[in-house]
Length: 184
Image 1 (cartoon, rainbow, N blue to C red):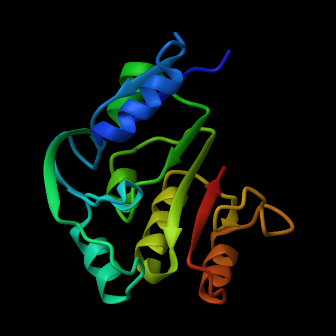
Image 2: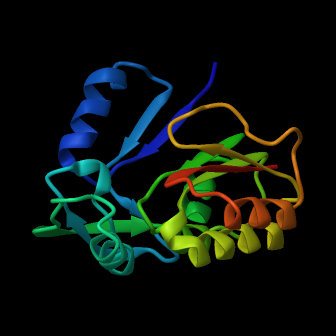
């Protein structure tokens, strides 16, 4: 039976997760954030909680490019943070890590120093430099093959798992707003 460790610093989102899965003994919910180091950070909140972020730079980019018309980040809260390495130390090495942190993926990956079986992270094309940095970080950790999904689709777009260079070329030649990259 699979075990899940979910990290969610937003109270309203954590509440939904707890109501849905809190009765399952294989589900652990931590109301905190992930970063390159443990401590505390500001989480910039939006009424559209799916775009709340710890990345001021990503928010500035989203505003400049009008990525989310009418969206504001008008509140913030301080959240406790820990690293992926600390989670692994506490809960064991996972088979799969999913990172969806609205532009803060690079910082989260800097808190990981070991390879796990599979990992995925969300990307946005308006933030391509950070996406490439994430790919390079994963490659440094030993991930050799990558796949990509666009938008909310859960289907791989490439005919086979590919090297980092093909993924970067694919991202540079596509005009898609966001998606997920998988690594193994």
